[in-house]
Length: 135
Image 1 (cartoon, rainbow, N blue to C red):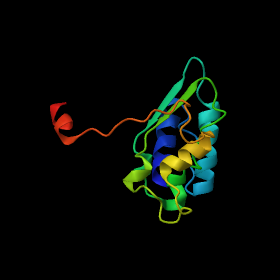
Image 2 (image 1 turned 90 degrees about the vertical axis):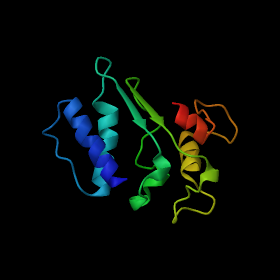
Image 3 (image 1 turned 135 degrees about the vertical axis):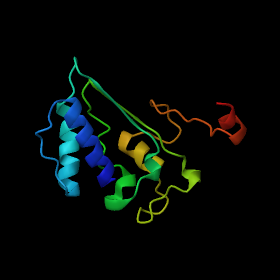
Image 4 (image 1 turned 90 degrees about the horizontal axis):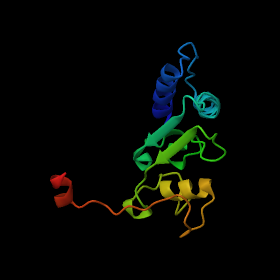
C-alpha cells in the first residue's frame, strides 16, 4: 500500500498543480498527506473520481489491505471513490488481520455497512473465462 499511496500522491500533485508538495516516505506521513489531499485539493471546478481496482491484491505492508489509509467517509462533494475487491471467498485475508477479516469486510466496516444492507455497494458476479474471451 505505501507504494500505491505514494504513486497516487504524485499523480494528484501533478493534477492539482502541487508539484512542490513534498511527498513523504514514511507510511504515517504518506497516509496523512493522502487524506489531506483528498479532503482539500479537489474542488467543485476540479473534482476527483478515484478508481481503485483490486485493493484485495495490494501488498499488505503496513496493513494496507485493511484500508485504514483510505478515507471513505466524510469526503467532500467534489470527491468520489470507487473501490473494487474480491469477495471474502477469494482468499483475500491479510495474513496478520484478525481472524475472519478480509479486505471486503474491512471496507464494509469502514463504511459502517451492516452485512446484507444496501449502501452504495454493488456485488458483481465473477466473469467466466469464455465471457472474458468474448470481450
